[in-house]
Length: 420
Image (cartoon, rainbow, N blue to C red):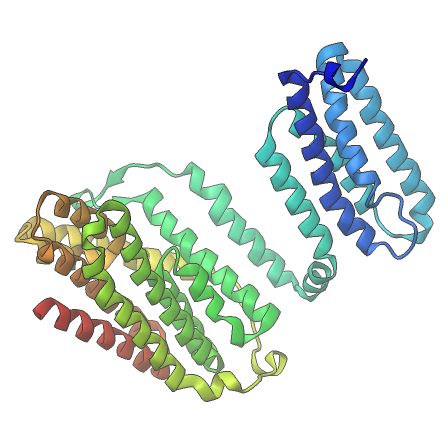
C-alpha cells in the first residue's frame, strides 16, 4: 500500500477536524492548569487536551458502536478524578482540577455533536475562572453580608421577576407597559451594581468605566446613577463627570452608527456636529479635572461604601420614566404631530435611537435630508436636556454645573449647525 492509496472521505475529514478542535480547546485549559501547578500536576498541558480528544472519540464510538462505550469511558474519567481527589484531600487543595478535567471531556463531546460555539465558550469561561482565582478569592473575601444580599436582590430583579411580567400596554393613552418599564429598572439596577463593584474593587478613579459600559445601553440611566453616587460620595465627582461625558459621547456615536446602517446619505450631516460635540466634551472634562485625575487616591480611606444596591432607587427612576412616558403621549395626543421638529423634541425626551431610525428611513425617500438631520440633532439636544434635569435633581452642585456645561455644548453646536 502506498501513500496515494490512503483516501480520506468527507466523514473522516469531518471527524479529524473535530478531533483537532477538541485538542485545541483542551490545550487552552491545560495551559492554565500547568502554569498554576507548583509541582507535578494531576492533569496539565498534556492531560487536558488528551481528555478532550477522548470525549470527542467516545461520542463517536457511542454513536456508531453503542452508548455503553461512552458511559464506561466517562465513568473511568470520573473515577480517576475521585481517586486523585482522595489522595490529595489531606493537602486541602480543592477539587477544581478534577472538575475541570471532567468538563474538558464533555467539551470534546460537545465538539463532536457540533455545538462548536458552546464548546469554545465553555473553554474560554473555564480558563478565565481558573486564571482569575486569586482575584476572585480576594474579592469574595472582601464581601460583607450586605454585599451578598445585594447580589441576590440584583438577580431577583433581572432574572426572576422580568420573565413573569405581562407584555401589554395599559393606562392613560396606552402609554405604559410593565415589561418595558421593568427593562429600565434592570438597566438602572445593572449600572448601580456595576458602579458599586467598581467602587469596592478599584476605588473612585475607575468609576468612569460605568459610563463607558452603560453608555452603550442608556446614557440617561448613566447620568441618573452617577449623579446619585456623586451626591452620596462627593469625592467621586471627577470620575462621575467623566463617566457621564463618556456615556453622552457614546450616545452621539450610537446615533451616527444607526443612521449609517439605515441611510448612509445622512451620516455626514450628523457626524460633523456630533463629533465636534464629543471632542468638546473631552476637552472640557480634561481641563476641568486634569489635576484630580493626576493625583493618586487611596480608595480605602476615601469611601465608606454602604447600601450597595437599592431596589427603591431603581423603582424611583422607573416611576419618573413612566410619568414622562405618559406626559409625552399626552402632548402628542393633544397637540398632534405638527411637524418633524416637534416629534423629534418629544421623542428625544425618552429615546434618541427610535427617532434616529424613523427619520433615517424617511430620509431615504427624498433628496432633501436637512430637515431629517436637524430633527435627529434636535432629539439629541432634547435628550441631553432631560439628562441634565436628572443631574440637577440628584447630583451635587459641582456635578450639576459640569452636566449643564455638557448640555450647553451640545445645544450650541447643534443649534448653530441647524441654523446654518
